[in-house]
Length: 161
Image (cartoon, rainbow, N blue to C red):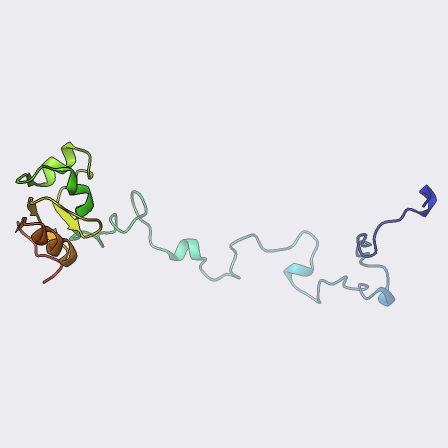
């Protein structure tokens, strides 16, 4: 191999399309712009978002105030926001302890929530506890009662009903 033998790989170099250079090139006369209209004129093309005179999407959509979210539109107005804690996280308490939202938030087991506590069934529980919550899943209730504990539902209903 010599320096004068070097050449680029086949297909790696592509010649640019030379438009307006006669009919035989395939890009003569109208140069790929079609016949008449805005797109055929020099400097003429539609701006992004232009829909041919139809009212564009950004003007058809309703105007909102504040952050764009379901809550700002009132869709989730009646949705409850519960702090969730798993049964396995409650195994750290001593037997006979009454576990409620304030205790869980104070120990960092869950975040503070305005609407109450929901206990879910992931994990194992070996101590008898009294659970005071708004919702308790069927699996969580079964594990709490199997360990000798009790469940007190305050407001709302359990997921098992």
